[in-house]
Length: 307
Length: 310
Image 1 (spheres, rainbow over the protein chains, first blue to last red):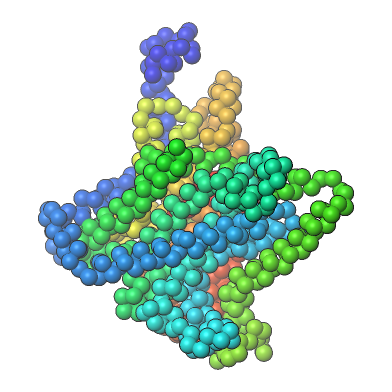
Image 2: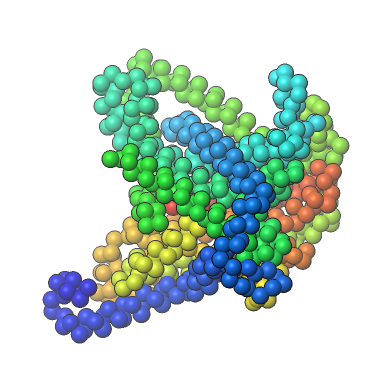
């Protein structure tokens, strides 16, 4: 560090340099401190505490006690945990590919200069920032089994036995997935649009000179050039799918029965609802490990592709 | 996690690449009416048609929401659907203020959103300056800790946070939410990404001119980072306004409830008041719509820059 700065400013004496470094540290910290105090107290410490808590028995009525892996044993024997895990995976399997595909299609459609294209982009993006309660409430009514608009539409196109959606344990999850895809695709569309606009025009020109059809240009220029964006979108989508929480709480509250209970919700119910701090932290740790594994795995796949 | 940080940084080039014209259009400069040009016209018309149909289809929930908010309860779920109310019941929009304390809910939401946004923008931009323009040992490790917590799902540490707030006696108060949400790592990350694109030479020149580091932050960097500040402010405001889980966990008494909680509880209590529920939903969305329309450019830039939210 010292030698590096010396090279840049040979006139300064090394003691002055050390003083400068100390001054810089002080200045740097004064900038960071206002945020860091809050970050340390309300994010960093809770994160670390969550790890420790998962190995402790601690409820609102008992004092904390170290129990090793007991929480995990109990968790793996609980069928609610497995149901919640399964539901979360099902949600991700529906939400990730559907959102990604629709976001890409929308981005391709909207990646052109037409009069009023901005309006279309904005309109498609808007659901993403609409308040979740309003979204959930509206979709719950749209999904209403007897006279909701969606089932009326299904009847009109000849489906006699339309699904019960949020009132049926088989169809509640698809209803949640449809709602969340509708809500999220505008956001990922923006990411894809940014990706599409970063593709150099020359690539398309060269492909055209070579006589590539639009379809070939799409498969051989657009798709490969979008790979970094796609990768990013998949990671973001997968992580957000495993975190799904508020939409479920507001739309179905985990029901009917336990058919849409997800991991985040279980953490809430056990930890804040019932005050089982240790046990709920064990579930948190599982959620974190899943999210981390998915992310790392996707990075590995990406690295191998790039090689 | 290091990898993740690297990748997030790799997204930074999106900065400044505001949505530029598509490749095809740049080629379309000469105004000849070649067959190709004519073909392009027809494609445009087809695309328009597709887009209009698509957007209308995607907007159905909103259309239905607004239309239902102007109906009587028994006309909301009719067979067949009435897209336009047979009689406009404007009184829903006057009655809702007395049916539920809507004004109080709106005030609470506004209060929280404004305070949290101000704190987040201020502390975020200060910290971002420290992380991008001041060199000191340990800085990058610290930043990694910030990035690392972005990767940890919030749900994984909400229980320790809750225990902490309980012990501080802050549950059922706005302070809990303010403390939890005003110092987010996300704001620091977003601002730092932007500051990295501002050349260090600018700060260097200001330093030679005798400006202190705080002076550089206030007079050089802040004015230059208006778009990023706007992005962060808008994203934070909308996030806070729309947040359901935070208020749901921490705010128990009705007088503290936000619009989201108030609306949800209204739905729980009077689930057959379809029209009034839709009226409440429309009212809860209107502030977001206004803010979004005023600052849509910044929303989109902010997202393209950081590629992430909350």
